[in-house]
Image (tube, rainbow, N blue to C red; front, side, top):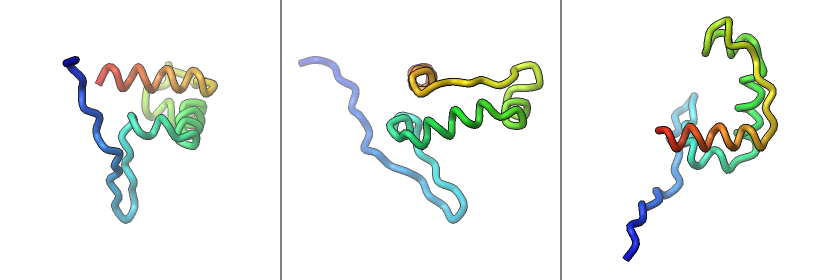
Length: 75
């Protein structure tokens, strides 16, 4: 019998003002990947999140998918 890691059932946490979706599920949603890309292309967001020297990033969907998968693997 192979060792397999059980996959969690998809879920979200919702409040009156916020919806949290785990990255492992959100990555499957094209709108999430587009928002991720748009945020990292916005100077106000990147300066607040990463500091003034980080700059902006213009990533396509393939790059976003790779980056989010890398973040999931590291967590």
